[in-house]
Amino acid sequence: MRRIHIVGRKNSGKTTLVTELVRYFSKRGRRVGTIKHTHHHHELDTPGKDSHLHREAGACAVGVLSRKLTAVFRPVDPDEPTADRYAALAPSFHDCDFVLVEGDLQTEAVKLEVWRAAVGNEPLALTHQSIRAVVTDDDAELPPVPVPVWRRSDIEALAQQIDRLLEAPRTEHP
Image 1 (tube, rainbow, N blue to C red):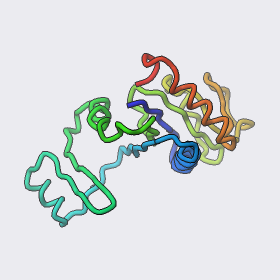
Image 2 (cartoon, one colour):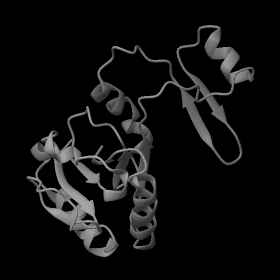
Image 3 (cartoon, helix red, strand yellow):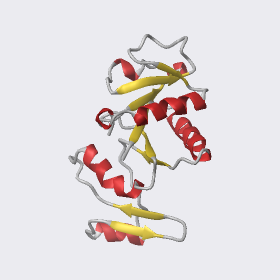
Image 4 (cartoon, rainbow, N blue to C red):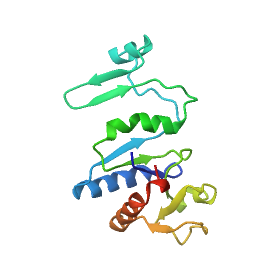
């Protein structure tokens, strides 16, 4: 599964950027999958519903099929490496040209950081070597970073940069 992670601090604009990129690529015939990564613990399934009861009873996987959506809930060992979890999701994204993952600084994958001066934090790129570029329109306030800085407002140019990253040899990205 070819994937690029969009990372950044809270309220940096990750979700907005991911949705704009998905719209841009989709209008051009690209099939883009997305994954939202969170380090917060919350229940994705609805407690009290049948699927949740099945899982609570011990099912190792629970599927939900409706007229418009398909979902699978799989309990995981919290010590399981994240890379294994992405590999387990890969079959569900087999028909995607690539996947944009919102978040997950800890995995070994190509990452782009969304940075906004208003958030008030140092760029993550200063301490995370896996970040390949900082995406911002606040470059005047951006401290010097060891990676390229890409314009946030130029979605077309940003999409071209993402295409270049996706075309890189497989050894450079998962």
